[in-house]
Length: 455
Image (cartoon, rainbow, N blue to C red; front, side):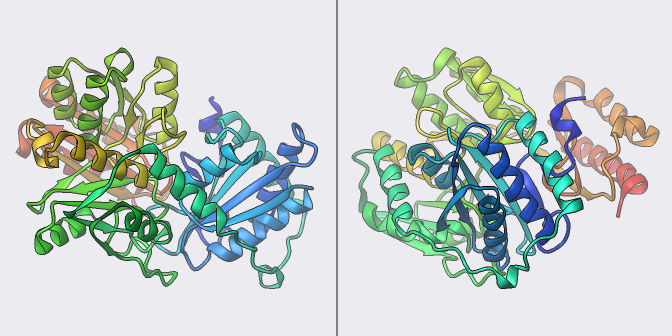
C-alpha cells in the first residue's frame, strides 16, 4: 500500500471538509498545527511558517486555530492575509519560511474549507511527509484539548506580501502592457483573486472589467469562477470583449472564454502554451504532461505539432511528479491547473492568465485563432455522490458496466472512472466519437455506482 492510499485525512490537495466538522473541527485543526510544527522542528530549531487564506466565512478562525497549534509547537507564524494558494507557495520559497499553509477549499462551496501544506521549497509536501504529519494529528486529536477559536485573536496580516506577489507576477511577463482597446473580462469568483486582480490589472492597463470582487464569506464560487466558466463566457459576449479569464476560489486555476460565448479550458491552454514554448526552444524533449481527463483532441493536435503527451493521474501533484520524472517544461489539467516550472512551483491561475495575454500580444492572434485546429471529441463527466470509496473493480455490476463500455468504444473512445481526491464523489468520464454511445455508457456506469454506493 502506498503512502497516498493509506492516508485518512489528506486527499490529493490537503485536508478538506465541512468547516467545524471533523476533520476540520477545532481539535483536529489545532492538532494539525502542532504536528506540522513538530515536523518542522526536526530540521529547523525555530521554524517559521507563512499562512494565507481565502475569503470563506470560516477561514479566519481556522487560520487562528492552526497558528495556535504551530506556536504551541515552537514555530513562528506570519500571515499574508487573504491571498492565493500559489502566492503562499512563492512566499514560502522566497522569504525563508520552512512551510507555507493555505486555508482554502479551492473550488468547493463556502461551507467547506481545507488546509494545504507547502514546504520551504514552494512544493507541496511529499505523500510520505503528509502521512507522518497525519499520524501525529490523529494522536494529538485523540488525547489533547484545543483552545476555543472564539478566544483566539485574529492573525496580524501583512500587506507587504501581497505586493511581493504582484511584483513577481509582473516580472514573469516583462514588457506586457495591455492596450486601451484590449477589452478583457476577469471573473475573480469572490475568492482570493479578488484581493490581487484589481491592482494587478490596473498596472497592466487595458480595458479590464473585474467581476465578483466583493466576497461576503458565503458567495465564493457561487455560480461563478472556473467551475462555472459559462458565466464569464456570457459576459464576454454581452460586453463585446475579446477575452475572458476566470479563477477558482484560491486562484490556482484559470479558464478562458473567447469572443463568441465559447469556453476555453485547460486543454486548449496547454496546446497554445506548448506550441509557444516549442517555437522558442523551451519545450524540453517536445513533451507535455496532461492527465487521464484531457481530451483525445488535445493529444491529436499536439501530435500534429510534433509534441508528445504523457498522461498522469488527476491532481496537480501527480502531474508535477510526472513532469519532474521526465524533465517536462509544461503540464496541466483540463480543469485549468497549468504548471510552468520555469516560472513557479505550483499551478497559478493569475500567472496562467498573464502568460496567455503575453502570448496573444506577441503573436497578434486571438485565442480563437490560436486554438482553431483543436478538435474536441465529445466528452461527458457524470459526478455521483457516494457514501464510501469502495474499490470499483470489486463491485460486479460496476465492473461489468465499465467492461461493456471499454469493449464497445475500444479505439474510438476512452473510459475513465475515478474517485475525487477532494470530495465524496465518483467521477465517470466517457469520451467517444459516437455521442450516443458516450451518453449511454456514462449513464449505465453512473447508475451502477449510484445503486451500490450512492448517498
